[in-house]
Image 1 (cartoon, rainbow, N blue to C red):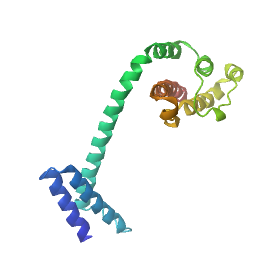
Image 2: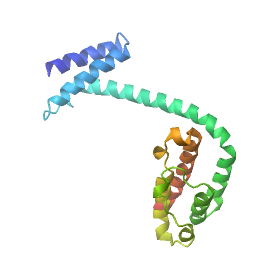
Image 3: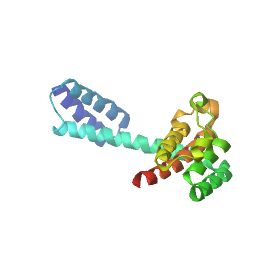
Image 4: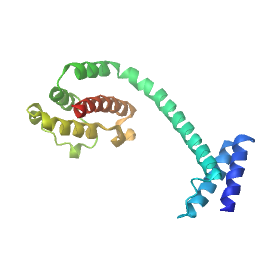
Length: 179
């Protein structure tokens, strides 16, 4: 425990005084690893542990924000080229019923990835009762989910297109869930 306390204090020194983030993160992570190795003892109420945890959380949040900014900048280029398709998507999401939205998506823009599991009968969707729509919508969200897309194979534009589809389908799903 003494080593973890010392490392934590050293990490705070690197962070606050010397302003060396990389070294601070390295030392603080080691302190937290040592604290974890002392389980079942709970050190979460110790001041040094709180300091180390909060600084590491701060670094992680900063990294997350940086990655999100980079992703948004990358997306901008693709959103511009997808503008006509996105306008049609928005229009259809606003004006069509859920059945018609799903039929339109599956016929006009079927998923390019994971097609061996793509077993949707468009005729059944058009006739689906209200209680089955939630399941069909959830299935569509899974089919189009951008995390399942191999950018090397399908390209970044398709990934961004799928993100937009999933964002809109999720909004519809949340509305249905609320009913």
